[in-house]
Amino acid sequence: MTIAPAIIQPSVINNSLQLWAEQASQNLLGAGGLGVVQSLWSYVTTSSSGFQPSQVSLVLDILGNITSNVEMAGARLSVETVYKVLSIADQLISDMSLDPSYSLAESLGPRLLWCLEKLFPVMSISNESFSLSYKNLDVRYITTSCDSIENNKILHLDATTTSISLPGDHGSDCEVKIISVTYPPKNGTFTSDYDNNGKTSFSYYLASDVRTNIVILNNQSYHLAKVNMSFTCGNDSCDQTAVCVFWDFAVAKWSSRGCLTQVTDGITQCMCDHLTSFAVLMSGHVAEDNLNDTILSYITEIGLCLSSVSLLLCILIQVVLLIHSRNIVASYRHVSTLHMSLFLLIFNISFLTPDFMKQDIPENLCVAFTFCSHFSLMGFFCWTLVQGIFLVCRLVFVFHHVTKAEFLVLSIVLGYVLPLAIAVGTFLVYFPHSYKSDSCWLDGHSGALMAFVVPIIVIMAINFLILIVVISKLLRPSISEGKSEDEEVVKKLAKAVLFCTPQFGLTWAIGIPMFAINQENLFLQYLFVLLNPLQGFFILLFTCLLDKKVMDLLKKLLLKTSVPNTTVMTTSSG
Image (tube, rainbow, N blue to C red; front, top):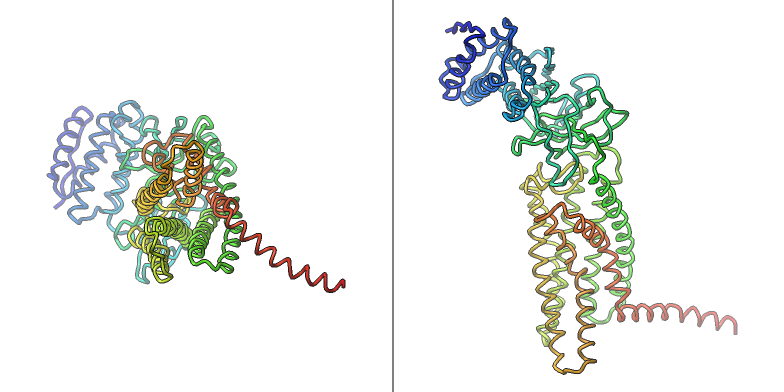
């Protein structure tokens, strides 16, 4: 049955909208509200007055409820009806700017985005591609088989601005529909609030059109496609403050999570690993945070490079000491230090490599770097725990010597099985949301980062208790009140703290208040990047260079290798 559209006049439009909004919210509009859509479309195409901002809000409520009701009913809107909704949306965009303060307060821009993102998934499937151009809206609809876009094959929606690819294989009979909607955000329709990971910065403003990308895979919305977009920044050239963002409905702010930004010749290139509505924000000033971020980044890279060189030297020394060691207890210590250095070196390499790769990193390689970084850093902390437990056994159980079998079991379970189980478990539970494509590290928004943070806090807490045990053992002999003995105890305590802190990974404790309490504290940020990237240097310093027993043993080995050469030279000269 066809519902005759109600002919509404400008004088009564407000009453009609209020009635329809109430009926739509209660799902009382018959036939999916098609009669209301027809009436609104007729009003838009025949009236020259348009909508007032308060009426725009009612229309958005009506359209949003209609699409939601159709979705819940499992029904479909005809292509013709979608055309009419787009025509209504085009008029709404023009009318939103009449009262910017009202539009901003009522979040009219984000509500329109929500309607557009909900509209196309409930549209009847069209097997023909089409393009539509309205006064404010440009729509492209492409239908194709998955063969042309899956396994990261790139499909260009147009000549220059947007391309999309799908990860993985989706089957030979798969059909995919791709929709791209572009429109200019009118003044006041969007807030420029930017969720910059809790960092402070100068104010941003919306500098480009908004582009909504939708993929429908086998009649279902699909959000994990990779999209590459080019944006111009209005009448101005995009500068280095430009940042690619999407509208995050969860926090009602713009967010750059999962997006990379590259500005070339005044054009911003956005590479994102998910689909929604995107735009470009720019700052009117070069933020002070940008300078601090650059400095912190350079300190981190230089520190990790120095750390890597130190770790290589430490590994070489520990291998030499392990080969020539005749003391079983000393060999345990060398094995622990060797593994700590090795795991930390692997982390440095896997963490630094994505920074030095200038081009876009392939998804599979980024996943591999993330897994390797997570596993190796977890391995480093687990080996600090192995070393700590071994130290406690020596101090507390004085008459019990740890056997090779006991040390082997402890090393395998804590040093290999535990970090591998945590890394693999994190991958299986959170993939494909386990990593950030812009840094190839664990994603904090999905919860994957907590699979690193929580075990590290537990290990550091145990290592801190071990440090307390070491200090208590050093304090026990100080029964005498002699000044010289007190000074000696203080020296031992200072030495214990200095030696144990980097070896137990306790410098990472600085990151807990920085990330959990105050992310904006520059002092903590600089202290964190000064201490932790130099972890390898500290291990070399305190386990090799400042360890008198180690240095004495190395000198003896060097003398042994030099004595035969001296003997040969003396014999030949005689």
